[in-house]
Length: 341
Ligand code: TXA
Ligand code: MG
Image (cartoon, rainbow, N blue to C red; front, top):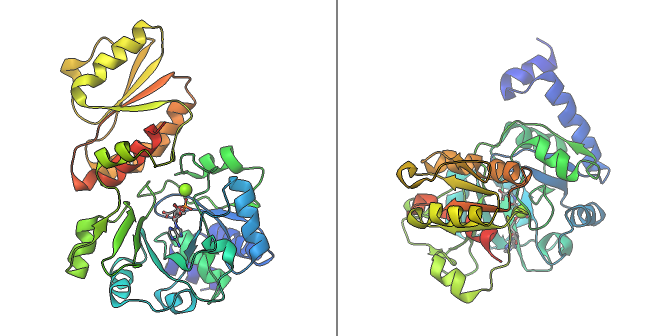
């Protein structure tokens, strides 16, 4: 068996994919940018040790430079290289959930460029669970890592298929690796070990309950209560479609849709429950997108649905408030940020 087909058996990647990954690694080594698939969303990657390559990411994304990037690594052992004073609980989570949708915020190593960490003394690290991302990291070699935010313009919706990246950033990125549709569809859970009790800064693919079960101790949730978010008014708009998006409980949803339609506005109503008994007649002004009622599939489809809606000329997106349950936490978080105005 030749080298390439042996590798195919090992990784499940086709020879074409392996060639593209080798080309991508070469681009990254010479300071270029490559968009690549992960299990959460597509990332826009550059060599984490190359400040001028990192600058390109900020430029392409139009992202403020004080917003730190997540560093993607190909093996748990890479933690030693990129972080220091790593608490036992962080090791436990890495061993249990990596590769997977969990980002650990840890004290940074001295050699990490400031532009990666936004000048902070911590660094976000994650080992992604996607065969293409892992093969790319392996091709780059040990002690190499990819600084990569989501591959979208700052504040907009993260891409969950390669075509989204092409549409939004296509001209500016040196290469886009196509890995199909992202399985999780929402960004990773971010957990900080800055204080004694670990704190979830962003809910995501790994639930707080799953983390607590591994640590056998409680974790804190930053801003997990909707009321707190609205009252404080400090949360910036993020993960947002261009079309105004509003969240309404099931009972009010269709009433608002009718009221907007009466003003001649075109509305897309995005539901998860069976609210047909409340639904007015659908017509040119009121359309419905019925989403799955289980959070995993809903989460996988949410961003693609919002992107599609954005391109369909609606005046408003009315979204049914998700169930008040921890399994829906990441979805509720993204929708609340998308509706912030
Ligand atoms: O699933 C994901 O996490 C995706 C894929 C590509 O891995 N990446 C992603 O990156 O969502 P980005 O840049 O769009 O969001 C990263 C978030 C930002 O809100 C950033 O502020 C936070 O992580 N972050 C990164 N490093 C941090 C640090 N040292 N301290 C606090 N927050 C940090
Ligand atoms: Mg992002």
